[in-house]
Length: 387
Image 1: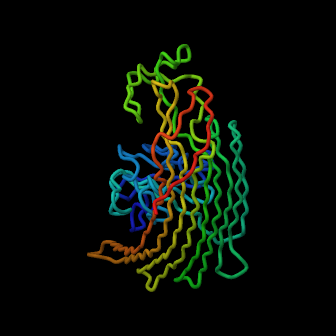
Image 2: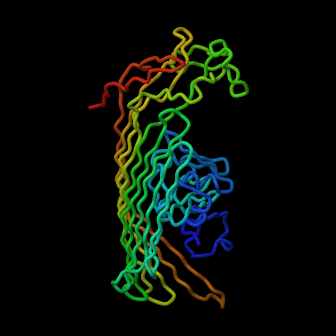
Image 3: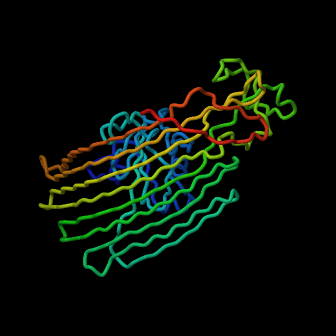
């Protein structure tokens, strides 16, 4: 069953939508380290971790903010602004609802929706688990998890902590990802259960924004065939560059400044209850708080300058501060109508979502130039914010 596809508690086979669920067991078996890895393994879903908009998805020809991303059924904002790198260690499953789904997930979900579901406490003996990962790029990941019933009758817990560093073949491109999540479930009676959950996530690292194209005449014998062709316009001065190629000596070069930094810190606080006042009536409520701070400080745009025979670079910095408070209440009522089983479901959502932006307004751009081969990265330079 998926909470993102239906409020009726129906199995997937009875849900009138295209739904795919990737559970934790599948993530472990397939080696999905991040949510982007998980999406890439799903049918008909494209995903990537671009420096400016990580963990964004494409379904049925729509991408970015046209695919809603939820966390335990909660929407935090457009995916191209709010989504971040995320480890799968503390996720019980990832749900993919493909096709228009605004009724279930909120405004603009033309292509579909992706819902991350946290691992839940399970009643029974305590089980501990630990795993580690290492790849040929020097990336590594470790995770410890524990869950089960406590000595307090009716009180179950789940705890997960993970840390990872993901490297790529590009010079200086890496991402540190840390996650800490815990949840307590308390079964007060057979008809009433309460829960409280705390989750903290942090990612930081250096970013890669692409390799600039250069004239074939410059690359000479180092020209890479079959990748690009034609001509291009210099973003900064409007001059024409062409015919184009990619210089093989720059395939792993990172043209970003040395002190570039992109990252985020996120804190989730959630609590709620599930109550069955009658055998055929279930009421669920979840109150939540979400706080996030995100930062980008980079040189993001590069263009070959036909006059200087060097690469022009810009500067860009923006900082987010986001606070969300809300409540989701659900009601389901089972009954018989003319002898046929019927289930009525309703949900009421209220939330306050406030996000502020602080952006560098330094002028003029581009800020500097670097050589095509073996560029000296340099530093970002002074920041200028509006008063």
